[in-house]
Length: 176
Image 1: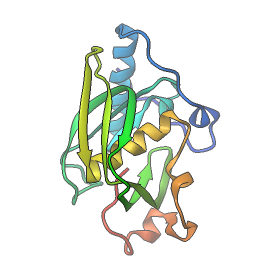
Image 2: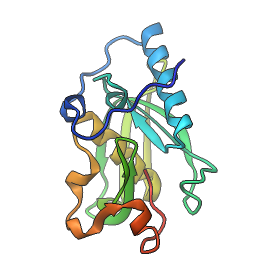
Image 3: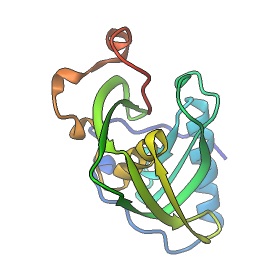
Image 4: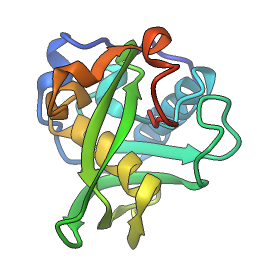
């Protein structure tokens, strides 16, 4: 396992649609290990394979006690491979987001409040979850990376986008 450099907004890999995983092998386990170590080293809530330069449909996420997110509900550690998201209803929530690939910036992003996600775990076993709130936000943010979308593309009003240190006094808790 290794801490890998995180690609920043503007890098071409972050604009690509990632390819599906077809083999659940030692190479995939190494990728997941590198993603986990990289995410934890930066106190991230999640990371997608394209963020470390690998254009495959793999994300991981977890929120426990994290200094970057002191006011959010826990999100269990999840390895999500070849995800499919289905919004459950039209209700949207706006919330502050940041991203390891857009360091130092935050924006107010609309996301579905409730959704179902399906995919495979690290061993290739299928799973299916229904979630809401912050958990749903984290999943949507990470899966966007697999489709070449970064959160600034989802911001409705660019007046709600700026540097974290400037916005900090104006906003409620924010996910990454």
